Length: 287
Image (cartoon, rainbow, N blue to C red; front, side, top):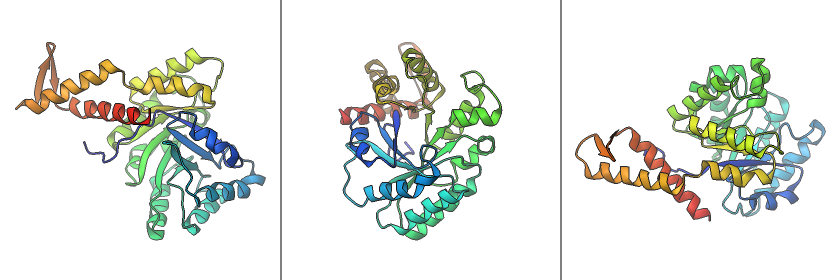
């Protein structure tokens, strides 16, 4: 496969930057990603303190317990985002990854990439597509930096930008466009959290829909959603076994297609099968 490092990004949950006491609980919640929040969840008067508390976390050997740690900074087009970037550039212990919200152009991503490269930081990038301009430029954004690991779909802000209802059908085109761009750039693509905590079945249904659309995972707003989200995006035993059969068949074949259980399978499917097996392996390692 082209990707050097496939990881499981089935679920993510936010943790406020003002509450470092909550970090250990978040990383032990079972989620694949813990996103430390500096943006919408932090009031302007608290931005400086949240930034300091968050960056202090990475000056020690904080154990993520297998969870991927990401810091969602503010938009780099406003003063708080610029302050976030400057603080990261000043520190010798940057976060392993940051999330860039409200991205509109590939230049925003390229600019951050170049600053980090000049500083010598290995920080990875995750990009939220939640603006109309970002949706229009999503294909170029997805390929704007080799640091990008995933695109995130911001459904709430996107619905507001598109002047449509925040529901499945009105946002289907936007979701599909983001999934298409992510696949073209060989990136993970992660969906917006489901906001109704009391509607677990509705959350599972939406998660299944985005999974079938090509998404890698979905966000959570509460720890009680994590296990169900993880289950939806974890390949089941039958799926993994079938993927392994197909991989083996192609290894033994001398052509670009094979027949399994009477079904003709062409070689482009192989890449997806390898991804299924890799994700299942990563999930098994976490258990």
